[in-house]
Amino acid sequence: RVLDLVQDYDRHKEYYTPEVVDSRVLARTGGDFEVRLRLLKKKVLTVVLDTEHAVHYESRDAARWWSRSRSTRIVEIRDPGKASEKPLPPDTGHGFLWRLNSYWTFQELDGGTYVECEAISLTRNVPAGLAWVVEPIIRTLPRESLANTLLATRRAVRGGAARSMPFQKCANVSGNRLMRRNRLAGESACPTNVGQTLSSVNPAISAIFSQLLTAWPSAQ
Image (cartoon, rainbow, N blue to C red):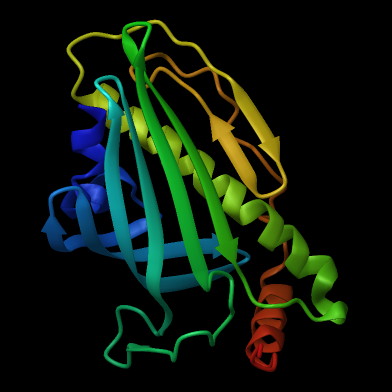
C-alpha cells in the first residue's frame, strides 16, 4: 500500500501539498519512472521550481523494497502563475536547489511499514557577505523538506487506513541528512520543528536579500 501511494506521482500534488504544486508521470516502464514535479520552496523567499526525475524501484525480497531518484532537470520559474511566467536557464536563479538525489527503503515489519529516506542536494555557492543569512536556509531547508515529505506520506497512508496502528519512531538529524523510521499508520509523536526558521525576518530585509541573491555571479 505504501509503495502504491509513493508511486502514484500523478497525485503527489495532493499528498505533498503545499511543497508539491503540480505532479505527473511522463513515462513508466516496470519499476522505472520519469516524473515531473513543480516544487514550492519557501524560506524567507518563495521560489518555484520545475523538476524532472528518473526514479527506479527494486525489490530486495518479499518484505523489502528500495528506490533511487535522480533529478534530470531543475529550473527556477520566474513569475509563476502569471502571464509573464517563464523558466530560467538551468543552474541560474536563486540556486537553492540545482540537483537532488534521494534514496528510499521500505520494509514491512511489526505489522506496519518502515520508511527510510536519505537525500543529497546541490545548491549554488554562498558569497561570504551573505553567509550569515543564506547558510541557515541551505542547511535547514533540506532537512525540513525531508521531514515534511515523510510526515505527509504517513498522513496520506493513514487517510486511507481502516484502523489506526501503534506508533514507533527513531529519528536522527545530522547535517543535511534526516532519517526517520516510523510505522506510517500510527499516531504522530514526532517534532515538526527539525531546524531553525527565519520566519521573523523583516519583509524589507527579504526584498533586499532577493536582490542580492539575483546579483550573484553564476557558479562555474
